[in-house]
Each structure stands twice: as structure tokens, then as C-alpha cells.
Amino acid sequence: MVYVRDEGSEFEAPIDFVWRYIFGGEAHDSAHKTTRNPKFKQVSDITIEYGSERYLRGKWAPDRLRITMVEPISVTTEWLEGVLAGSKFVYVYSPRGAKTRIDVYGEFTSKTLAPDEVEAAAREFLETEFSADAPVIKAGYEKSKSSRT
Image 1 (cartoon, rainbow, N blue to C red):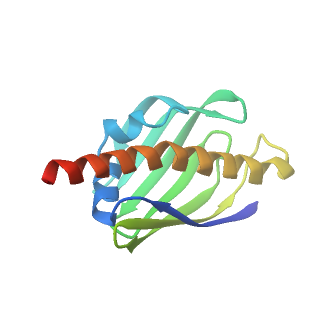
Image 2 (cartoon, rainbow, N blue to C red):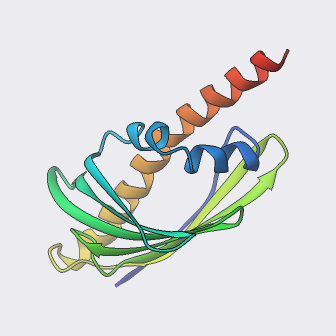
């Protein structure tokens, strides 16, 4: 198991806009080109199970995550099936005026990767997730500001 801390990334939009995007369903899901064939199962008012095929470490493989959203503070994720099954991590959101800081803390593990590859896989996952969301959030927020004027 590898502890990963990734602090200081920022979305260029206020926290309320970021949360609307996170809950935006198809718009949010379609931004992520490293997942396909998504399936959602509502577990509770704040928890879903998300299944898909995910491109990670150079190949497509099935995965399933349990995701709990505590608006506007955090998203907690437990990786149930897939390359990083058994991993648990939390995204923490902090308002910064017109921006939103996002920090990630978690323990990552894998039954299929060598121990020295686990951290690289976790960081690859986090980077691709942020890289998919950041430009969509920025463009959406810019568009929303211009439509109000």
C-alpha cells in the first residue's frame, strides 16, 4: 500500500460551479476519455457505485468505484474492482474566491501491479482525472460569466 498526497491543484471556478459540474452527469462523464461504458448505481442520497472500463497503465480494463459526495467539502472513493482495487482516497475541496483548490489524500494498492508501480498508477489516474476536468470547468465557468453580462 502506498500513501499518496497531491495538494494544491486548482480549478478556475468557484466551488458552487465546480459542484454543479461534478453532479452534472453526462457533461462530467463525457469529459473523461479514459473511461467508457459507464454504469451508475445509486446506493444512497450521497453514494453511487460507478462501473466502467478504464484506460490505465496502457490498457483498458473493467473497474468499479464506490463514490460518496459530501457537498461542498469532499468526495470519498473506494476502488472496488480493477487495477487499483482496495485503494481508498478522498478529494477535499476548498473555496478560494473565483477558484477552488483540490487536494487528494489516499492509500493506493493493487493486486495486479508490482508494488513500485502502484504510486505511478495512482498519480497517472489523478493527473488524467484533473486534466480532463480542469479545462471543461474553466470553459464552462467563462461561458457562464459571459452569458450573465
